[in-house]
Length: 88
Image (cartoon, rainbow, N blue to C red; front, side):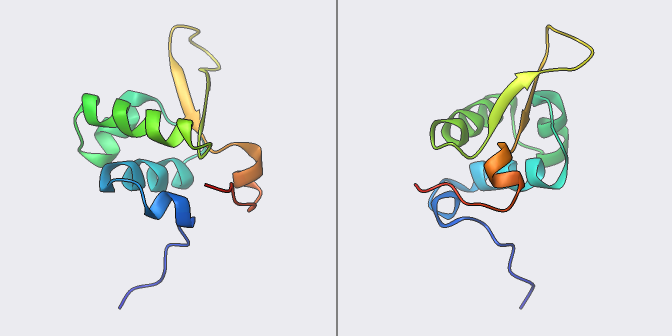
């Protein structure tokens, strides 16, 4: 058996694609949709849906790309990045 991934309980209840996107975002600092599609192998539609669910529950936040205002990046909110959990 592998090492536990320490996924917050609320994220565990989401669909597998949302959990995968959460883990990808947790591994990187902030990722764009294109980066998440490449990293997860999921379709762009699936990634969009997963990000919406994660954002709706407060597990990620969406911010402007630092060098390209037309793009958005998705990252853990400061409360989760510091190790605190969001209540579902």
